[in-house]
Image 1 (cartoon, rainbow, N blue to C red):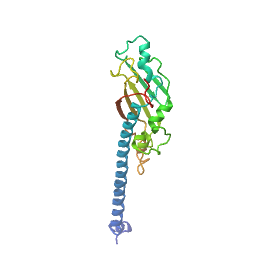
Image 2 (cartoon, one colour):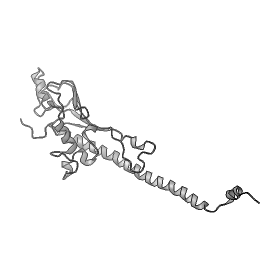
Image 3 (spheres, rainbow, N blue to C red):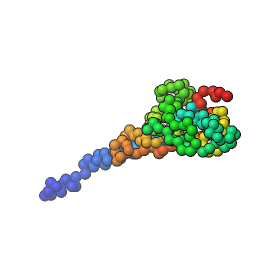
Image 4 (cartoon, helix red, strand yellow):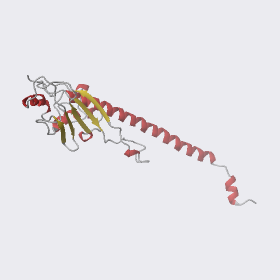
Length: 218
């Protein structure tokens, strides 16, 4: 007579149920993981679009650093001939430290302007991510609500456009970057460190126009 252990080894009753259970677990992980990864690609794309919108707003808005829109006139007052090439400068502003750092020709430039940053984040005349009536009124967080001003870095770099004495201000190249934002996962969050994966930093550059939120005065 065979032993109970030998009979248990030869017993195949319920094997199909075990196999189905294992396979179904793997199928559910694959399906739910696919949903999360597709949502991750959406987040990546939305951040890229939000940065483009922010750069466009910044090109026609009051700068995040005070004094920049008067810099083309200020350099004339410091012995640069009117109509000559603008001296080079580079300004970097970030909400995380609430500072703007300027290198080069920086006469009268320096203080961080939180209201100007909010215009780029929320859109014109708004302090919310949900009240844009059209794309023309949308800010960065209307495109991707998780964007906060602490995630945004903006740079103004003189690249040869404009001239000293230009009434509308200098014409720097504006670069906006968004970073330090983790992906949001619904099903994979907390598994194998997925909740710590960062959305790749996104940057868009555009040439400035009139650096003023209102009509320029001549």
